[in-house]
Structures are given as C-alpha cells and as structure tokens.
Length: 66
Image: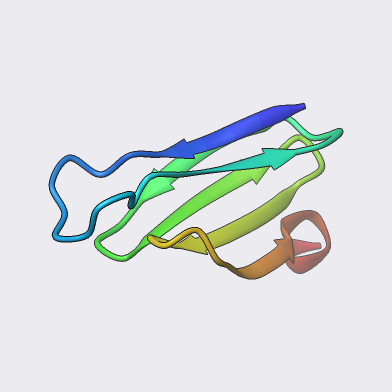
C-alpha cells in the first residue's frame, strides 16, 4: 500500500493539499507538471491526477506499449 501526497508550495486556495491511498499498489515513480501529478505503480498503472486530486486517467502501460 502507498499513499500519494500532494502539497503545493504556493497556492491561492486554502486546504489545497490532498492524498490518495492506493490499496495493494506501491508507487514507484512520481512526476509533477504545472497542473497535474502522475504516478506509476508496481502494477504498471500510470495514474494522472489534477492538482485538485481528481484522477483523470489510468493507463496500463504494460499493455499500452506491448
């Protein structure tokens, strides 16, 4: 189990921190853009989140590139 946590350094909104608990998965890679957060897990899922914490995409990268 992993917990992905997001805490912006500067923001206009109060309480903009969030966390996502991934039951049975381990986060292996994390990437951050200007309006998104991405994580790759041990199940080869690429999960993309908005900076508000909404998961907008989940791709199995093993099947995607095979």
